[in-house]
Length: 213
Length: 375
Image: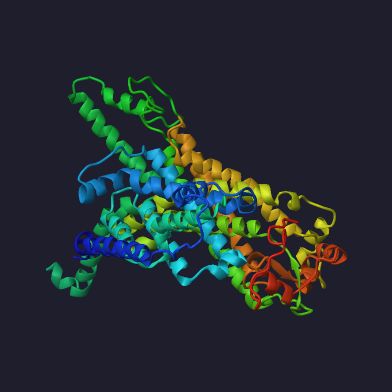
């Protein structure tokens, strides 16, 4: 009964909340617009936006030195999670069956395991840094901890269900993933999509001012 | 006639005696010593065999010799096989039974007694000694003890170790302890989850151990005065505090135990989790035994570490949570280090610490190098 609920209605509901919520949030950002820039632009905003969008993937040298731990952990987590989410065989099969209708090449099992380990190591280190560093601890809200905790639980339950031999473990993983999907649009996890807007906006503004930001 | 001459009670008694005698005759083989019974049985069997052999066609049974060869009681004799793979030439590994018996009859009960004993001892110690207080009381002066990086990797290895310990203990004791509570189906699910989680986080522990070792090894090299600390039992024996450096003898010994035993734990764990590098079954059995013994030892030691770092000692946890420890605590437990810090003017007030940690009204103001200082 609970299994059918998790596998059926709750999955579609969470997917709908995620889709509609995310679109609404993105629409709200776009609808807010930007302040009119009355100054004569020194250069085009588009180039600045694009430059900023990609150049920020590599940190400034001083930041890279001081925040080496968060830099490495951040990349480990995000790349590991991306590989897990879209290239783990069980996820490819699930997405092909439920959403896309077609599959794509998946990672070999050993690469899947390494991705999971890197992602978990990265997330644990980032969470500890958030808790222990006085500045990030002050900046962090309950929302940040709920979001991190949910992502951690989803990843952990997925790892515990690796044997794919027990239906309750798969259902637990799916249930936590559904909770995450529902929570996602209303949380800071939206930075998955909004980072493009924030970087683009800053880059465009600086580009128009002729600043190499 | 005879009935008339012998009283009825006597007849009943004789009948009862006969019954008892019959019972004794029937039960006699069961009451006699085993050897006697065995001799009787052997004699009976021999007699039967002799009778059968007299009747049977004299063709030897080939399967007896075959199974005698298959069941290699004296050791493993590997034969040749078309099947490629490790141990494919060995039909029966007799050490498997030795390993299984060790696990079931020695490892599980004795390691359980050890862990339960340590928990009991710590509880008793707490009720007898109580929380070790800072004699001078917690003051408003602090010393910087652990950098952000050090605290992060400490809690990183702590969380990974606790997860591995929990899942490992479920796998070790689950059968006798958890099946009666949650049933076989529930336990099989939990055991599968524990096994997968344990295997996945095992290599992560290796990384965490390496990070810890590199960061803390320099401060854990034994120094002059460490032996004195040990002889006085870290202050438990005798009166007064025993001076020590940044880490005392107990902490240093725990570090080296973690490092050395940790290597065995990681090595044996990798042998178990990656059975694809040609290791034989007997290697896996030895790896399992060494993995279990060393991890149980490590869990017992870490229980003591957790105790002293939390409820056992006042002010001990602060350094690993905030990065700063109380000056009075440092004077009483790490006098040599505290003295050096005081001479070098590294004492800071509580308000300064609050300001550094961003707890003051002015918000965070972290001076360069202060947060990341390794010292």
